[in-house]
Picture (cartoon, rainbow, N blue to C red):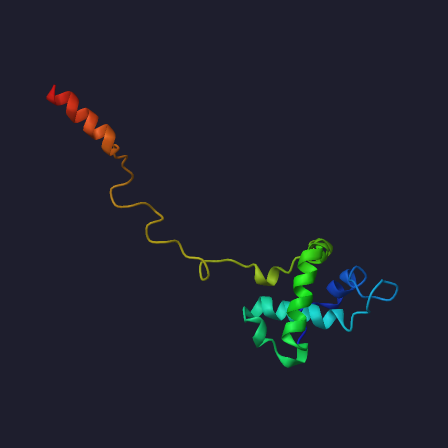
Length: 128
């Protein structure tokens, strides 16, 4: 199974995750598999129901994801990982980003048009 999380990244976050020995409550079966499942969903853009069986029951993964959102766990994980950006997915060049045809300005340049009220007021002055 291809892993989305590198070994170095896993080492940085594994000790802050809930469910390890010594934590109150039930012991997590496999935090890494759960995080890999969430990363798969994020990367693929698929619906939760499309989660491959190798990650377990989609509803269980979704419920745990939602609980971690409410508890602030994802923020802790992001803070632990933010010093290690993955630049392979942030390259931007002209093959990815293109300017809209109107971004350089319309033919004839910019022109400021008076508002309707202003135009009507100037017409009244010329009549009087």
